[in-house]
Figure (spheres, rainbow, N blue to C red):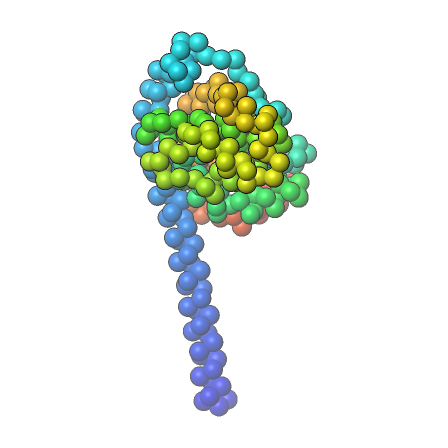
Length: 259
């Protein structure tokens, strides 16, 4: 072999090694981002418990009377507190407890969304979303609750997943309570074809599902969960597994369907 050929092969191997190291670094950075963000969403959990207890039986105006619990169309699970994406016939279930103001939830959604869409669209997985208000409790404000109500209103219109994704794509900084504005939420609904209707606007502005969101937040507390997102695959907490990746989740789903 000529010296030139040997140099060419050596250079190719070096390029490959550099590329592999870049991929490893990117994966470590992604995991660090999710872990770091999740810490932010855990801080102040004790205050959430206090807020939930203090606000039990009250609406946003401070009244001692709470409105009726109105679950969104097609809500499922215990007490109809979950919004499902995917077919009932899918064997495995992914349960996600999340807060639209939580940066760790956004990090999870950004990393896993393409895989979740693929698996739910192909009928291999169903995802049950539970909406909570941990950041409202940590930092004050009502953006978590208002966004969750709006997402439930989108579910009534059969457009939950699309609006859910839009909310995370347009998530404000954690300290910015922009989602507390119904007008802002309705503006974002304009990004989902056919969602911004008089019925949707009325549902958002009247807080049709506010008590349902409050009940979901109470269920989060009662479940003993420590932060958002909490992600369970057939009951097992996979978000706590630092080796978990979208590819690994896909393998778990495929194995569950074969079994």
